[in-house]
Amino acid sequence: MNEQPPVVVHPPDGSGRRRVGIRGQDVGSATGPRDLLEFLRRAGLDPDQIALDDPALIRWRGGGPDDWPGSPG
Image (tube, rainbow, N blue to C red; front, top):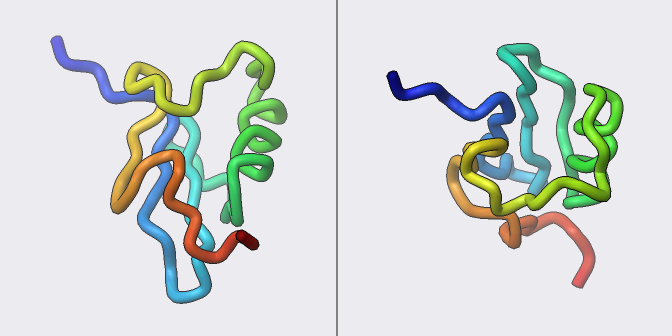
């Protein structure tokens, strides 16, 4: 059985924000890794134990964990 990761980060929109879904629920838009980690913390995960490049946890669409075109340099 091929299970999908519980977190999906969608491609950046025109302003660089990325929509985030956790367990099938839209939880908001992130402008960078800090926002994403906050969404995960609110979902009950420990941000200190999260690897943003873990494919078992996060499915990245339209770019990976380093692709935040709207975030400052």
